[in-house]
Length: 72
Image (cartoon, rainbow, N blue to C red; front, side):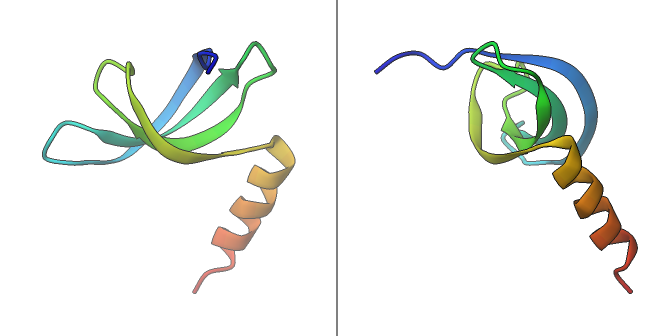
């Protein structure tokens, strides 16, 4: 299995932190040398290990923001 290459190009926000030090974050991440996208997932403090997450395009982030703005 080939190694996954990633680069966090911009740290946007830490949403929460677990007792073990893992943090749930929103970042811009480039996966395998592709253009960076918005990424929400858990990371260790040194960003060496990651949990499962979701990566979304700018257009999807705009739709997500719209949906969140409409929450009551």
